[in-house]
Length: 432
Image (cartoon, rainbow, N blue to C red):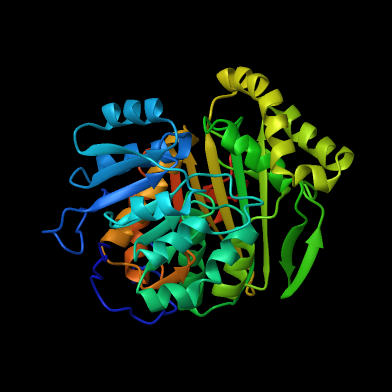
């Protein structure tokens, strides 16, 4: 029998304010206490892809954030699954699940409260099989999708999720995910001050090597190189070449300046439509620098059809993975994301999130979304993280505090000079 997730509070209409009455909200304070919607319930969370880097990291972070939750690690490899369960402890178990087997999938969802879909890559996936199964079994749903087509295919199941009373959030990882919530808070703060309209939103991401996330992020990167980039300029959709439009972005202390390139990421379209910002783009860069050059060359030499073919991309991943792993040993796995918001009055606000390990940060971020949903923050339907029905406005601050655990640099709604590695002094200690 399906376990219907209780809702903690009715949805409050979106307002043009941040989650605090002051723009100086301390997002990096102590981690808020978890207050589950029904404290008497024995919550069970199924993590699909739980034997992989992203799913495993999510399971570990969730077990630390809320130890009372029963975690079901799901995957195809029993040996890896049992090893993860041994790591998590007695409040966990393993379930052998193949997401391509609809009967097996639905059976695995029938006795859990929430499913986390971390079995990527999501690029070129023909159907939202896990979300469809979650709706049929009335199971709350979160995914870490980073593909535009998949995310909006999930969004098209809105009516079905509403009818089934199922809350669901798509693109709920680190980026997209936490980056969307950061942008939503920045836009809300700008509008609450009523001094200028938000006009331009730019997402910039950096990951050293594969960020410790393994072959999945490598496959994702290659598949994205086969997608034409969608961006928005003054309200108009524009199409651009992948891994073009390089700019140099300052990610602040510990990361410094890095080259980033255009990619087709779902938060561009979702934030444009949800937050109403007319100009939006997203860029990504990595290190060592020659990986950026290599991806530029791939987009120029390989036909898009090859880069969109999952089987051929997997062959390339198998070829490059040993080399990437070797370079990862000295490049590290630092991750940083910077969100820039420009307003019509000339003001610029910046949000920054930097962590030493992507393999840890992605799990902490996803776990923050899981807890928010279990606390009753999400309404029935399929939502993006920046929608107030997905993460309620008043729940954003707690989510960001949880997601930013372990960061060495986290700021929001600050002027650029507070981020830049070498701020420029104009006169008498005044910096720009």
